[in-house]
Length: 86
Image (cartoon, rainbow, N blue to C red; front, top):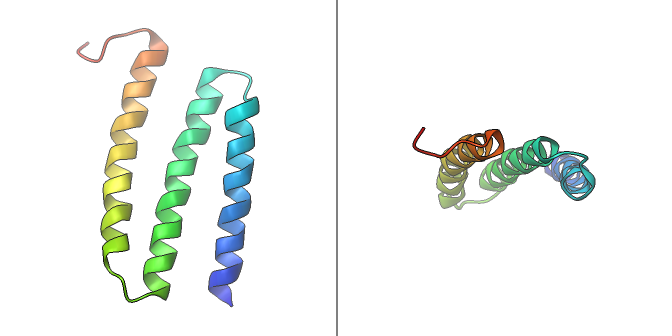
């Protein structure tokens, strides 16, 4: 029961983030929404790991978190107009 409530809450948050991605007034707003979507994907993986016997979903959540961190840093550099090696 509690998992269904949490999953529906995460789904609602995903739709709100997707709205901001498509209707965001500026590129940084869209970047933050995409970053939050990454956090929500990690939340989905963690909830499904707790509800199922599959442990590999936690590994996916960890890998997604690390990839998301690097992607946000690269996007921030791009939005500033700098190259990645600066």
